[in-house]
Length: 434
Image (cartoon, rainbow, N blue to C red; front, side, top):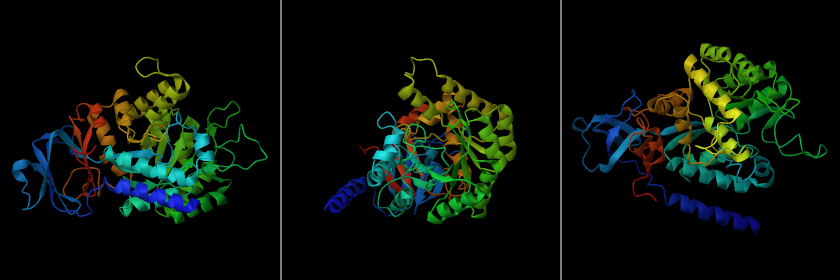
């Protein structure tokens, strides 16, 4: 009976999701905004239009140069700027803000069925906010449930962004939550990620996750395991190399959680493709990242959000916390050195659908609005190795397109006001969407 009720509830939720999705057909659509920011430079193009055919961008340019076929749907977007669909390179759709439910309680007390339904809702909220692609870096104790969420999105069962998933992620044994501190040592708790010890287990974990559907492999190079709770390396260089080499052999890139300078250096030396967080990285370490072409996702919003939850930080009223100042310094150093910076927010720590906060934070930390938009579009697509598929508004690319009231290439906070969302040629939001 309980299983039947769960299935009934799921079907009802899916029906609600599909009520907001556009028809599956992908006909000709002419988009007529005030301007188009195509990720081809810094400024938006006034008077441009975009023609979409069968899920792809068929033409883009001045209105007089683009001829729509008879019967094409025309969507007027007055006062709005078209952009490529936005990309967040660091999300956790299986988490929700820690001021609602602490991380330990989400992992230990929320059933996986419930967390999967939450993830589906988070995916919908993200898509409707103009983010058409996510790299989701770990289910945080929900196993391989992201594989099913991705499949449901891809098959059109539920609306959501295009997902690149990292499934369980990989951590050193006894170095990640829940615990080991603060819990009974004689009780085995479910883990937030897959634990390994030694190179053989490292290789086995990569093969298992790849076999179950991981697009990326995520490792934790360091964590709060120091004697005083400080951040220290966890995996050895040999273990990280085993993870990276095995992942690369199967064609999968590797993302590394690394907050300390030593953790970042070890991960870069091991050959990872991206660094997440990097708050404690030194200028010399960022220079090493630039030399090796390792990209950086700064996750600035996660730091300010946790400061609000746990350190009484009040935006606009409080002084930045020590951790916020450290993250700001790291970001500015990476910019100065010329490291590739992609938009990665750690959303899930804060509310899904407010992913715009990370580009806004990067502008507050020194980027121009156009630079932040690049980080969330064409630069992010290159980091995903998908620059030939999406990330720009250009002929032949997939029609992943958003529109925002105003002009976010001039005023980044305009990303708070999405009025149109299209993914793969299917319209999910119009100005009439509630």
